[in-house]
Length: 292
Length: 315
Image 1 (tube, rainbow over the protein chains, first blue to last red):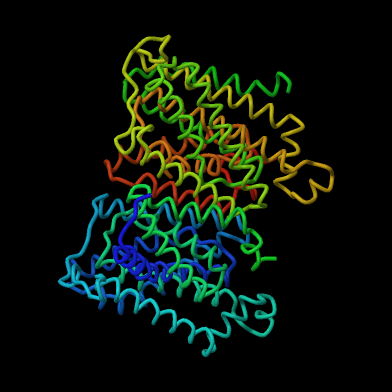
Image 2 (cartoon, one colour):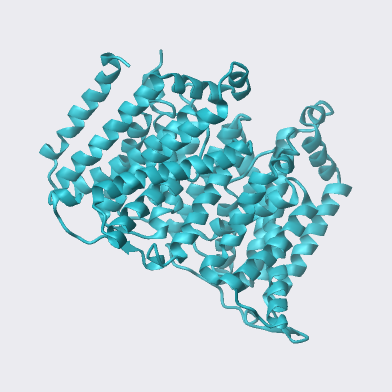
């Protein structure tokens, strides 16, 4: 194994933490949907791809800065997520695990290929003036868009936390997550809460997409790269746990950054998959904790 | 298994075998061979997913392993393609058994099994893409040497018959499984694993046998792919496309039925060709249709278990 001077390693760790926060944001939506609906949403990655294209179009057609595009995209994706759960996934799944698996897989195939049909397979990216800017932290250089992503990801997590703990909607969501039948008995509209939760998950993706776009590219398959990462984070952080998703995201960000540094780019992705498989295989009790 | 069990398969084989007598255009035979390869991969998925109820999202791991083994043995070690093909199929079986052992022993099922198989396939893809031995990102090319003893045929029709023979063999294997003790136990595990175990079924053993057999059949499709197209790279061999294709055909055609995967494969690919001629070549459009079909089949199941075939098999 090659050895690197400490400031290179430190920089890799810090950049990993910064990217990891955005990963955490992607995982946040996934873990919330899992915690409340107890479903694994395979379409999560495709929805992220879609959000990134939406942010790209906002920039190209309307000249909106990706960070400004957060404002219109969040309500848009909330509505999209709400509709998908209420009118497609919910009715089609009829409560069966395997059906949900297939329906969300079908959704992801449809979304991914609609994007392919519209935008073709070219890799696109936005040109913003601050894309290459760096912040100096001692001897280390940090990419500006990543620092913004880090900050906003934490703000979103905080907003989500406040929403879940202090509002009536949040209380209803937590009630449904804990005890679906009981929640229905006290008059909570469970189907509505499911759809709201799914909508929040999609809204998190919209934010993540806008944060990613200034330092990442978009193509029809870009979401796939994130979806396994997000699953890994969710599994690591504990299914359904909001702080777990953020911490898991930071950890995975660092792992990815370091394995990229030591193993090279093409082999670097393998670290995440291996962690994922190992956690799934050897900590299944942790996984099924929410179900059992 | 009786003669009556084999009659529909024989009828299918007889009808399908006459195709090259009517269709001689290269592109159409090409399409037919490709469809048969997909059907074969789907038949493999059907053993584990359809009869065993274990939905794998990573059958690319088996497809790719057999494809690479076949190609590498020929290109790097000068092995004749026929034994290379056999080794490829066996290698896929071993990979299937190992993945099954790891996942089933850890009690993974449902979505978790789907996720872990997906991750295994991705690990293989990254490794094949990075390793020199597999040709790396540039891929691996099998030398063109058209001789029957070299598993390369001058006429596409010959290859079509070879592919058809493998599909028919897989139909017979599936039928035999359906009629066997193992098949009954596999269905019992699918319907209710705990109940099956309470009755003394060795659930782990049954699932391991199913995944190994499943991997070998999908592996045969991969080896055939390598031998037909004579080129592989990591995104072809281990790409998610084949995992999805292998799953779509049985789900849409009728999971857990003998003819489901073949029927589904033919319907899907005819549909995709039809739309191509109708609206021109728009990338991804065929898959959009596949995805919509998948959602519709799950949403409106023709008799609870998804699958168009069940529409006609109502009893």
